[in-house]
Every structure is written in structure tokens, then in C-alpha cells.
Image (cartoon, rainbow, N blue to C red; front, side, top):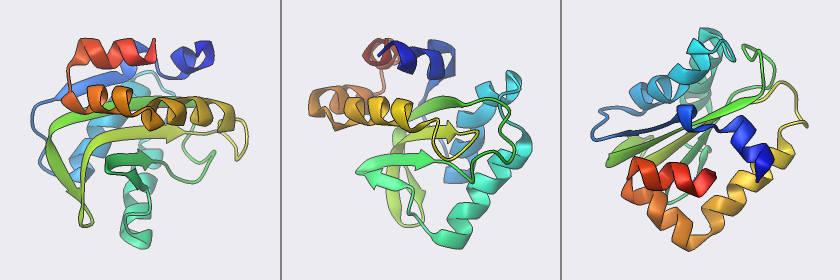
Amino acid sequence: MTQLMNYLPKEHIQVKDKISTWQEAVKITSQPLLEEKKITPVYVENMIDSVYQNGPYMVLADYFALMHAKPGIGVCKQSMSLLVTKNEVDLAGKPIKIFLVLAATDSASHLESLQEIMEVFMDEEKYQLILKGNLTDVIQVFQ
């Protein structure tokens, strides 16, 4: 899990009580990566455009969306950020509470960290803990 902490440090994890739209959620989730110059605004726009063009294919499980766009474009450094909302946000007809932004510099180097993070989300106990949206608990799951 050490690699995971490098890509998803606690500074990249947020919990919000209410988010109105999935577009707002993507922008809020991306904020730490923008501030650290790991991604550019182009990447954020590409993630949003990708949903408009391809539908909700980024929804991988109940309440969980893995937000991403084409590797490399607008990505300065491989990174991740996470937002948990206490309300359900409609993403093209799917209710989402967990937004994970994955910024990859190429099509392969992120696969190991993605596998590690998916192991966390596939653990039902940890998944339910994340869904509850207690920031301290969510951070602990990824430490």
C-alpha cells in the first residue's frame, strides 16, 4: 500500500456534505491536483467532455465513479484525488457518492496503483466505511 499513499495522500481526500452536480464534483475532486500543478484545467475539461461523449462508463460500482481522461493530455504528474459526498450526485442517470480522479501520464504506469486502489474499493467493509463519509475514517482506509 505504500505506493497508494504516494498517489493518494490525505491532502487529496475530501468529504463534502452536499454537491449539486457531477461536473461540480469533478472540479472539486480535481482541485488539490490543480493546486499542486499535477494536472491542468485541460484535464478537468477532458474528463467532463468524456462523460458527455461516452455516457456514464466511468461508473464502476454502486455510488463509485473513476473519473479520468486520455492519459498524458493535461497531466503533469501521475496522481489521484478522492471526493466523498454525503448526498447522491446524478452522473448521467447513475447515483454517485465517491468520485476518484485518476490522472495518468501514459497508458501503463498507473496500472499498479489503480489495482491497489481497486482492492480497497472491492473490500466491502472498507467500501461501506468510505461511503459513510467520515473524513478521518476515509483517510485511514488509504494509509
